[in-house]
Length: 202
Image 1 (cartoon, rainbow, N blue to C red):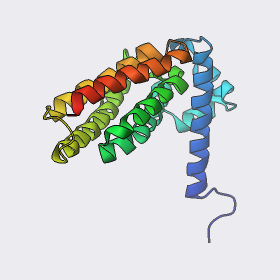
Image 2 (image 1 turned 30 degrees about the horizontal axis):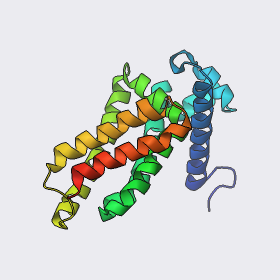
Image 3 (image 1 turned 180 degrees about the vertical axis):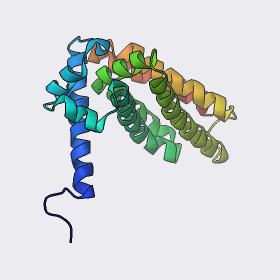
Image 4 (image 1 turned 60 degrees about the vertical axis):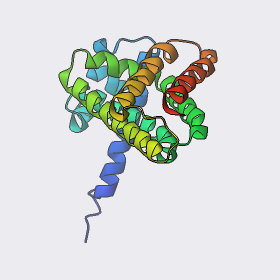
């Protein structure tokens, strides 16, 4: 019979996920308001999330661990919104996918700032980002290969084209969405969609 005083595995997992969400939200809010992540102490981050410093260290090794998990969260969103186009390789779904990707860069702008800046000096964060981006590149390559088999995509080199297009979208999201006004987003979507469609489709 399970103890009534100890949380079950599911409850512990739920509590951990809720704590992560609170820390992600608090960190994004602080950085979005102009704070430099490198100068934010664990105590400040924990306080903004409504937890103690000791509770932070129960769940995270350090700030780098927080950023690695933040990267997993954000890039999982990018994979999710890209999946419909990947699965069908249908050009009709490309604009919707790119629109959703740009929306993630807009909504999670502070997270992308944190991740990119931390990766510049933290090798563990940089390695995590490379691994996550490679997973997106691989999924894009597979989509291109399916499109070529179906006869709807041009005979481009799948691996290299997937890598170039993925990093192009990443740089556009970071440089052209994160630091601009929302009214510009539709122009970024139009340009990215046009480049990808012209590159891939016959």
